[in-house]
Length: 329
Image (spheres, rainbow, N blue to C red):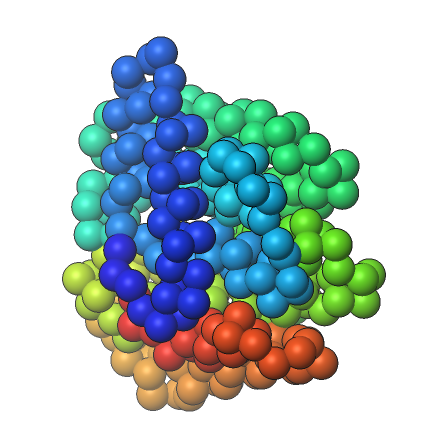
């Protein structure tokens, strides 16, 4: 995982999170450690735990003196990463994915059953650490977060193969399945810093908008990036019949032949017409439309924390929001 200026603001804290993550993967069952280490050490930007650190610091969090495991900011960042990793393990099984971050998925390497069960381990370990944090408010936030993520995943499954999925319905899915964890990360950072209700809500709003922008750009990259850039197979969403925003836009605004091609691909899945659909998405303005929506979300995120005192942490949060719409991977 490469360092960048956004991470550098909390470099020491970030290093401590990575140390804590690895220490919490320990288990008497070797396969749990093997799969856990494999997926957690397999690259990734750690954006969600980073958001905990930046939010907490921007809100004035001061860690207690003492052992690393007594630092609730570090604990919460670890919890967020474990929840995220558990969802990845489960998602890859549901989606039958064979590549993530440029390497074989855990389900491809070890099979579906071990992947699901290690995902369950990470969820349960996350809740063990939550108890150690000792904040009923954070427990409430994160239990609600995991529940809503699950609802979003189920709704996405329902939407698969449905070419009549609306933009509003799709945005609700990504707010549930992706943006909710960003929201929870930012909100927990504010809560452990004992922020006011107003500031806590502002951080939650910031996280929700950044998470939405992040997912919209993911949708764009499925039609504009190479497998090497994305670290996963091109066209995965289309192959699974997922009606993402670029495809929804084509079905609403594209020429009739393009509309029919996309509808057929969503209903039937598969990549038989992938090249032509990439051309359809590119030529009718779907990429620009989705990017503009992402930029709008990033701008709303920055607006949400505009009233916070200026600091290196606030600047990093703003940079993180803007970087979420400029990334190539």
